[in-house]
Length: 113
Length: 113
DNA sequence: TTGACATATGCCTAAATAGGCATATAATCG
DNA sequence: CGATTATATGCCTATTTAGGCATATGTCAA
Image 1 (cartoon, each protein chain N blue to C red):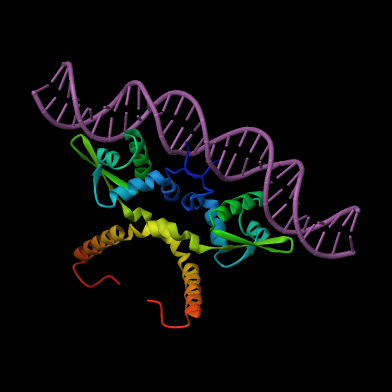
Image 2 (cartoon, each protein chain N blue to C red; image 1 turned 60 degrees about the vertical axis):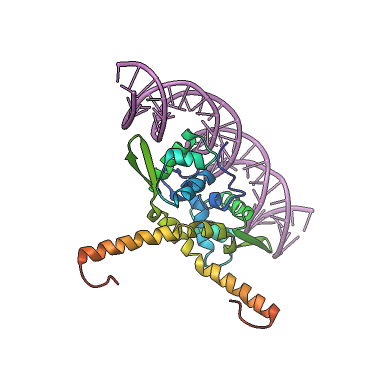
């Protein structure tokens, strides 16, 4: 019983650094598979397989253009990640506040910008 | 050659739903292992092992209290996730904006609250 | 020391991949 | 049609890992 399938879980899908690399490559916009292969140090089948996983969880969408397939981000599907992380923002900020306090205390003057 | 070790990568660490459950359980504050075991449908060794992984990537910190071990969040270490996600905020918002436009267009009146 | 409680670890197995490679599928061109 | 380009898939293997269970380790109390 290993981890929940990357095919059904956004968290698992982005757990793979190569898949994050692909998503990053798509930030600038729609790209064909071949373009991604050129941009990243990955084989074509490797890219296609990762795109499949990303597609299964909805993080990318595909559209045909002749014999090419153009993939683009669907950042909406990052929402679960975003919302999960948001729960920690408070704790996060509390900690940063304490750091600010600490720094202010050390410097004993002015406000950090 | 499987995915990068959950032991060294925050993304992989939070890819496991049970580990997210543990982190969630710690949002309210420091807790002993036994308390987590009571809160969640997991065995004690299971919890300990997940805590080990979370600890290895720095997401939790541990302190001894008699024979108990109290674990607490270290949300600072969610930063890589946070920063990675932030890169998509722009694309995310663009899409929401388009959705807003679309909704406004459909309704042809007033602002959505 | 002995025993009870709290937690961590080791061993084992089943399952899920990632990646390599070859190849299937599909679209375009001559 | 045949050749070429673009992408997807299937097969195989090595590796990772989650969970069960037993047990080691550590701490406290009497």
